[in-house]
Length: 154
Ligand SMILES: Cc1cc2nc3c(=O)[nH]c(=O)nc-3n(C[C@H](O)[C@H](O)[C@H](O)COP(=O)(O)O)c2cc1C
Image (cartoon, rainbow, N blue to C red; front, side, top):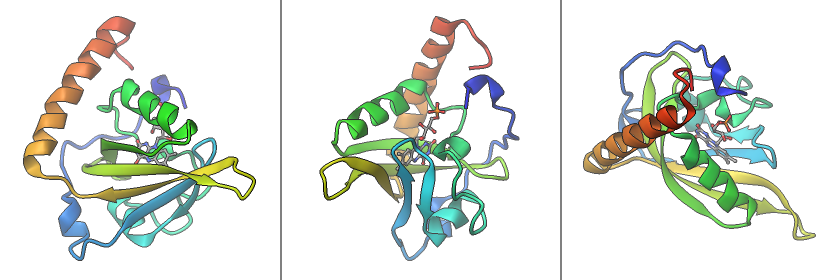
């Protein structure tokens, strides 16, 4: 999906990960090699505001928040497609327009023949200070990306 087609509703209100997931269950999604969602667990759907079946078959960027810099996902894909685990911080878009922050751990899923057939992501809640740090850092990167592209819709 091109960034220019982003036309989802945005609400500047955070949903707290720990309130939705007080028992700290694993928050999981899996994709195929292209990032099409093949599995979600219930707590991930609850956090993201989707019902069972609504996320399956969709590209994982359905929860991409426009505040996320492009370079973060580029690094993520470069790492994961190289067969390595990636660990990073993501601001995600909830279906209703709100958002949540997570620390994500993305790992390749291998077939017996050694080929990467997909990816798995597990997420955990974030410390408030760290969240603030990334909020500022991503704003800075995003601003630079916008300037470099000279494109206000990016
Ligand atoms: C296993 C896995 C989990 C992902 N989880 C997220 C996620 O939680 N939020 C997100 O915005 N992108 C996630 N992505 C990255 C998306 O596929 C996509 O690259 C990103 O949303 C940026 O969109 P774009 O590639 O269309 O620019 C994940 C990818 C994989 C392979």
